[in-house]
Image (cartoon, rainbow, N blue to C red):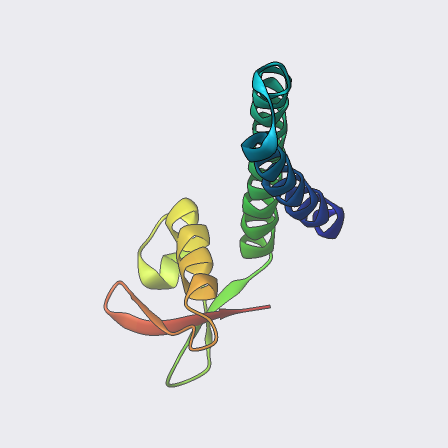
Length: 117
């Protein structure tokens, strides 16, 4: 579905560009209709883009919850208890590590770690 949403955002952007081109060539009456159309298309594009962003954020959270932190030197899997952090901080650290990909190494509680499945 994300690919479809991305396509919709791009298609609506093209529709906006074409509508703005038409607006430049429009007479006064046509311009009134086109301005309203441009506003609605822009609003639809923003809503679809927001939906895409929300789905991506949910995907990243779900992915982070299926990840584990590993010590960068020893390759040992670490638990929140090993690091002295809460489960929520652990999940956030997994997300932060994924956001720094491809490197992925971050510091948590003074230890260099990375997230992996």
